[in-house]
Amino acid sequence: MKKTSRKVVIVGTGFVGTSIAYAMINQGVSNELVLIDVNQEKAEGEALDLLDGMAWGETNVSVWSGTYEECKDADIVVVTAGVNQKPGQTRLDLVKTNAMITRQIVREVMDSGFDGIFVVASNPVDILTYLTWKESGLPTSRVIGTGTTLDTTRFRKEIALKLNVDPRSVHGYILGEHGDSEVAAWSHTTVGGKPIMEYVEKDHRLEEKDLEIIADKVKNAAYEIIDRKKATYYGIGMSTTRLVKAILNNEQAVLPVSSYLRGEYGENDIFTGVPSIVGENGVREIIDLSISEAEKEMFHRSVSELKKVLETVL
Image (cartoon, rainbow, N blue to C red; front, side, top):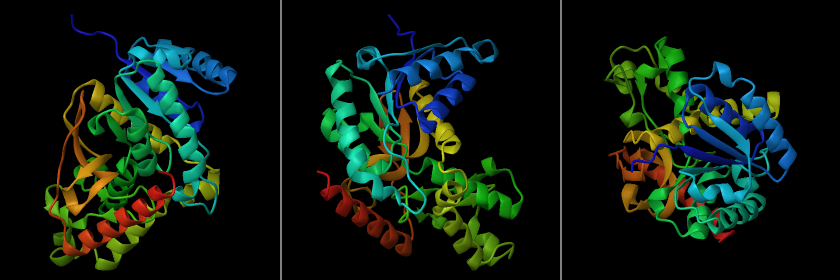
């Protein structure tokens, strides 16, 4: 019999977890949504608040607060729990505390008999995705970090603003760490199918310095937001929802998620942001782009930074 339920469990009801839940309900992504938090009352309150708007949602969704037992028959468990990035902190600064929290969450989830897909949204996402894989024992294809999905939407937005086009007409990726060593893949960035470098070399609508400014703005976007409102959550909420939707709908969508590398881009044994084909079984395939030599060097540096940090928590 074909499975009719689409059950998602969100662990952590802070700003990020509730933003994901809100986006999922508005988009009608699942029909069962469970919220888990160490603060049970907070999870209960969030569930009740979300239910109050159900009459205006895309679909009727059952929302409730629960325990880790609820993970047993879940399709997806989204992990958002952890300490937040503070002004002046990098995402990698959070690693030791959030590694401990992630390990405990994954143990609790797996003890329930969970056999679905993990989506990791906590930071530093590449490191915590690796730890989730190690702790869970699941195939690498079924452990996915949000990777550079948010960075990529910021990238497309900035290019769109500069050229005055719809960001959905911009295609390109941020690769590597979701953080300070991320790489803008200009060699595979197009606007309306036209390579971005043609806008620089032929149309002169962009200059080389504009590319540097855009990449820098994307890299520092989180710092800008955190300085002003202490946290970022709407963007990652929508980005995570996009990933969850691709899995539940078996879309085979290409998304820049944190996937496990086995030789792609010349790297091994690390989760990091690369374009990947995502469907109901998780990551089906990594798209190994032929990036420029300069971009390859930057990507290798990014992975090297991640591996140094990973060694401190393995």
